[in-house]
Image (tube, one colour):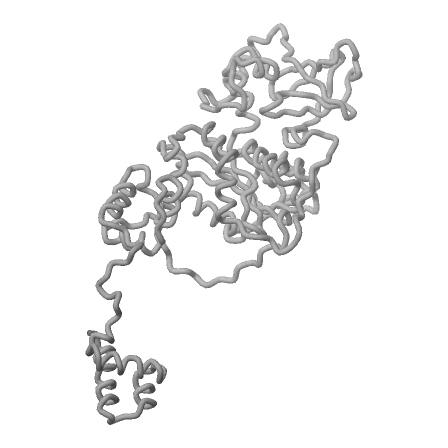
Length: 435
């Protein structure tokens, strides 16, 4: 018996001997008078053992057996789960192994086995958080995080966007480094999957903001928009620039969560390439994450359905103005292209055209609302130009485009002679560190 039970036995003996009243016993034991009468009767019939709970020493019916505990420890010590935090491991036990267990019980088992969570908990710092936006689609935070997501010893950049009101992921895309293509792809996932947001919150990376913006502002001038800024402007999205990582804390905390969870999910599925990771992220993981972590919004959705007559791919691309010559040929990034409008020459000589370049659709031209294809135009000194171009780009870049080389689709949209030339052209436009 513990001290409390010994004290209760002492009071009950005095009550049974008539030394104190039932009310006094009730106050001393902090029990109702009815309960005092019940315990008094039980003590007279069974002795002081009536004060001991009947379940003491009895194993709960739902308790795990020693074999089940050993199975959990065996699963946790598997190399697949060595970087898995305890709460994520609890979810994986139920999803992958059909084992349902409370977090407290799991924590106790792992602690007794000497297994610590790799996710260290820091002492929380008091600070004022900005209140969430009221409606989904009112504000998206965008960023990229360099990390060894695939566990292969190299850093990959994961681009993402998260809704401020609900914490819902609207897009994720992985590349070898932070680049324009990654951010354009995430915005395309957002627009096609949810709609056009009202605002985007980003840092001051040169992908989002011209490096001359501050100098221009001091001179009272307005800097040119970046390609990403121009695309958002055409979609009617305003962009806000954060002055510190803490200002966009929603997406900074997202990276902390994903760095703890996503590598484990990829390892379980045997995913070790960027292409496989992007398929998993877009098809499965966005839904998995949002079902678990997103919260309901207070207001109605502010996402605007995309209803432009212009294709979304003609906005989320590289767009620059060029002037054709008398033969309908223009220069772009060291290459010469011929507009494919033979049979119905709709573009006059020396016309200004918009050049549209995307990984998906190659190089195209838009003139007065109509889009035309292009073909690589060879010139007599093409060999010299080609050799000069090869020296100007970074050689042996392991960059893989959206389409597989030598397929019919690849040959239809990309028309460079060599695979390396095509990759160098794509890399220089989309995949360099500061596009």
